[in-house]
Amino acid sequence: MANEAHPCPCDIGHRIEYGGLGHEVQVEHIKAYLTKSPVDAGKAVVVIQDIFGWQLPNTRYMADMIAGNGYTTIVPDFFVGQEPWHPSGDWSTFPEWLKTRNARKIDKEFDAVLKYLKQQCQAKRIGVVGFCWGGIAVHHLMLKYPELRAGVSVYGIIKDAEDVYGLKNPTLFIFAENDAVIPLEQVSLLTQKLKEHCKVEYQIKTFSGQTHGFVHRKREDCSPEDKPYIDEARRNLLEWLNKFSRLTDVVNLQNHSDHLCCKRDLLLFADQSFYDMLMFHI
Image 1 (spheres, rainbow, N blue to C red):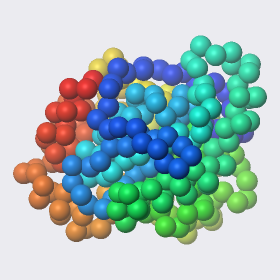
Image 2: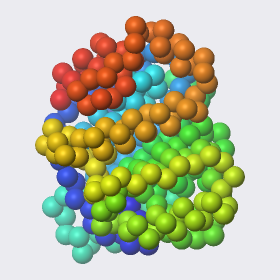
Image 3: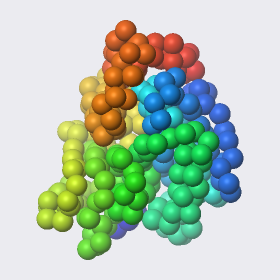
């Protein structure tokens, strides 16, 4: 589900076996998965789950990937203890299930997460990344929280309404050309409306031949023809976050390592030991 106007089911894709480098913490009334960056740069990213929940290994892998690039990352349980959608669930019951998990009603939880990152992790610059359901949440948050440095909405879109185009922060939207959930007509409408109403920097990128979930729920080693697109989308995600971090942070990150390493999945890992740990846990 990544489209309020057309909440049809999405396939879980490849569920990876991944243990994770972080640990679970309690953030007021919600649980969360936290990974500290190997570089203390005062930067953090909130990673927002898809319909399959905050414990999905694929989402934790993405959080750890971002952490390896100089950001403390946190994956909160924005369902607040409610069950995530099960891949074998009856899709006819999905609309009813969704009613109690509104991606635009997470402000209370997000406020708690922001407070935690600032007080417990000393985060001064915070961004947000979300997938599918989480992509809708990112779109919502970028309309309400001017303190956020940047956002990346990955195959998530809020249905057409006059109040959803005045973004307050730089936002990258990533879509798939062959997404059964988000037709290209909706992407075109978003493009048109943002051009008319948005006053901050934004980018909309659609990946040729790709399907819903390709960035985090498709294993590149299982889909070699898709690997260049997966790598490019992940790289774009990181570059967007880095673009809106201060230059001094980038310099400090580069000084932490001899160079930025391009490895198996072409992700930018500033810390070799962190990358090695990440690969060990897959």
